[in-house]
Length: 141
Image (cartoon, rainbow, N blue to C red):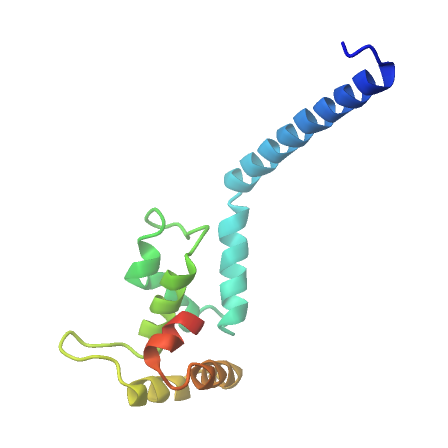
């Protein structure tokens, strides 16, 4: 094609590797979707993050939250949760708001005190880094 056997071989090898990598990627995506690997890995990660190995407390409440339930089909777990949705759902679980009032800093601190020990430390650090501002805290969780 270009008159050089080395150049033709290099182009051919690049093309073969490109096609092979696309086929392997497509197969990987198909298997991940078929066996729900992403949803399972996300669930395990959230369970570890919220320190709820028995899945009876925070994790259950988290997955039952309307913001999270809306991300997947009924009876299934989502395979992706946007960071803002995650933060808002978790914040609402830790310190729920009522229809007529806003969440106050005192409400948030009281909700943090009800969390497991290491998770309390995490939330306190995030609250401190947010300068005790709830709006900034939403962005850091």
